[in-house]
Amino acid sequence: MSDDIVILGGARTAIGTFGGSLAGVPPIELATIAAKAALERSGVESLQIGNVVFGHVINTEPRDMYLSRVAAMQAGIPDTTPAMNVNRLCGSGAQAIVSVVQSLMLGDAEFGLAGGAESMTRSPYIVPDQRWGSKMGDIRTLDMMLGALSCPFGTGHMGVTAENVAAEHGVTREAQDAFAMESQKRAAAAIEAGLFDEQIVPVPVKVKRDMVDFARDEHPKATTAEALAGLKTVFKKDGTVTAGNASGINDGAAALVLARASAAEAAGLKPRARVIGYAHAGVRPEVMGIGPVPAVQNLLNRTGLTVGDFDVIESNEAFAAQALAV
Image 1 (cartoon, helix red, strand yellow):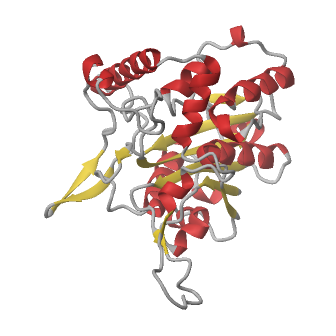
Image 2 (cartoon, rainbow, N blue to C red):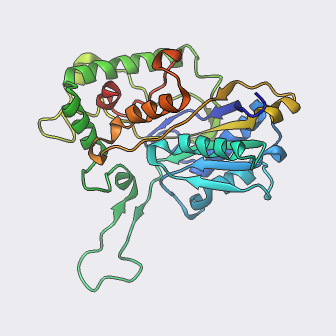
């Protein structure tokens, strides 16, 4: 047990929708708030943290290029502790955890902080021609948010990859809408019951002249099966993916404190979970959403576990088509 890697605690902000309550909060501030809360809830002193890794994809300002370092120091972690940003796109936060786990396994640190922060709302437009000028004609701007949601190999928007997954795995529009409807219902019920309250750390946001705490996920929307069925497809003329069964565009941050089990025991800290494995996998870019399947297969092969050994499986629901195929 002494060599195990354990999770001591964590925290997240509530999830803000595109242009919503967190629009005025930079991702570094979101990361800082999550990091401070994770440290407090885990019982770990900031001075004990030996490594910090944060997942982050879209830089909204120059400081974001070292978001992990700025957030760590703002959270009270000393400047002698190294930090690193990682970018595995949608898997960036998960990769941050894996990277910290690896550093703890190697003995680089006794305690580590892993997290992720993103503000899609604040994604910038860039002017690539501005650096050296343009001899004549219009100068274009590029939307970095849309760019982050586009396949670098020419497939197009991520929604197109969801269409491809649906076509290859026979996932119908009706099945996607039903899945999306059930997902919205479950999310709304969980929020109303306060099931996420323990996870969430409030974020102060300005509303008119006042500062209020934002502490409730705002992306889930009340809808009906009829409303979902009436939506037009977005990415393909005769496709199946609509705004109602597609991925959301959101803002938020989360952080976890991890440790070597021996260090946690010596500090008198009680672990909440134990990390027993991790795995990655690559698939054809045009069907990127099916990636969890070979990744889980790799995990099972590495750990000797079976799917039946898991009481709960959390699968990222980006698009209903992708979630159903997985």
